[in-house]
Length: 227
Image 1 (cartoon, rainbow, N blue to C red):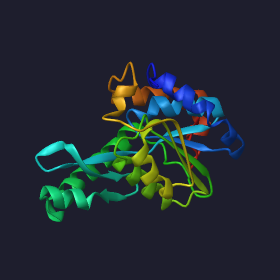
Image 2: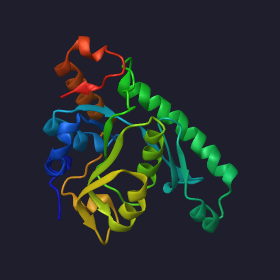
Image 3: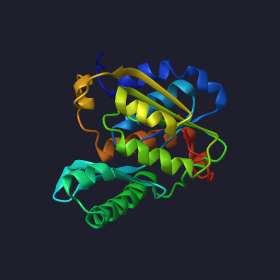
């Protein structure tokens, strides 16, 4: 299965999530690529949309080699088995994680501005990304969300590696995936158009959502923005 782009992926994913509309869910997208997917889900469900910021923790000197992730809320996930096999110490990887935590804070300010973080306690939260390969960043996001005591966490993705999805299943209450892939080298191979989503695109989506909801509701602390 292939998706035309993230909009198409979000629409197909949304079709599998319609039953959650009755639970008044909150849809959270992982920026950047998860936001256009999450936007389609929120639109279909008539649900509020917000971001949940997470950053990959790369290996020292090899930033593209992911050794874990740090998420909004302070959750840190490190693949210590991989660290040991590659000879990276806890100290040097933790230093990298601290730098990524600063970037998480910067992105929260960039994407939310003056708007408050959404209230999660007691709510059904649908966490959306554009796909799951290794699952490290998603795992950190889930663990951070869990500390906010939501009623239910639903992980929803268009595509994911079966092994990674199964490793994530115990971390969430429910998991929805359009296409669980037995073989995956990258998420992008399942998209015709997988161009990188920019910060400006994320900000644009959120700005449109806030405008549709109106200034009075946007200033209501603890509420996310409706589409």
